[in-house]
Length: 243
Image (cartoon, rainbow, N blue to C red; front, side):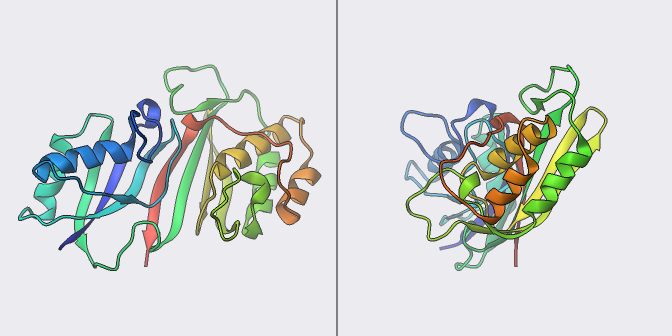
């Protein structure tokens, strides 16, 4: 049976995140509903590269599924989009090896978090208004994150994880007018990890949290600490890389 890899964009504003939930609108649920229509009302399970939270967006989410169909990948992409709402779109579709797995085959994930320093409000569903911040301080904090670290202090507790170590390849804040973006990539990310990191770095920039405390939590991780979590709307999963 052919295995298809799809790349997906979505506006997470109207969704309860990626993962399928009973009686809730989710990205996984929307795509599986569209596939069920194409598969003569028989359900097909899809597997995503990451489980984005409620309100989080994506321009490069990846998923895979197995589907016995006569449609080629281009026709399948169009057929899926014809059965999807306007806030989620399949932007690429191709047949891949049966060994490919959207989550476990991924080698690098990229996130962008958008903050806004002025009072412009028309992108309020896609940025976090933070007011005045110190870019140099933010980048000093961001540089601490790079490398192989245990991010226990900056993740939601999950029982089934073997470990909480992540390799962070890039971690930088970049200013573009009144929008300041935090760009980060790594081999994996834990639940709420980027939001905890962003929220705490912003508080460091505001002088409400100590850089030394932040560095200590990166180097000597502990659970149940006093840190800050950024809201979901500024976060975008932009890309997932595979070998």
